[in-house]
Image 1: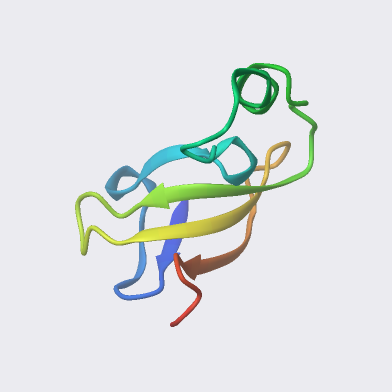
Image 2: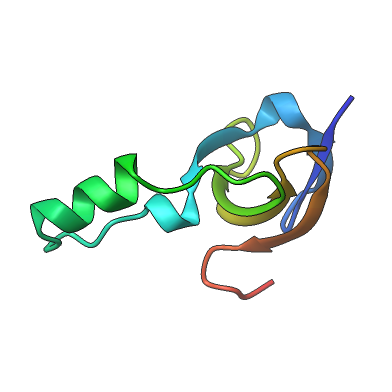
Length: 85
């Protein structure tokens, strides 16, 4: 079973979390159409470490960023959104 260590609740099962998107796919509200298309549809999906936005939906409901290896699914780092632990 895969565990994610929530910065607030500690290690929990993957089933408690919801993946939102890679951090690089977060767009600015005032971005032009070309920038939006490039960020959302033309980005590379490289194997290896990926910074991702996740939410602890069945726990404390906090948002966090994870660094996850897309090839092995190993989680290298977890931090709350905003950086304060």
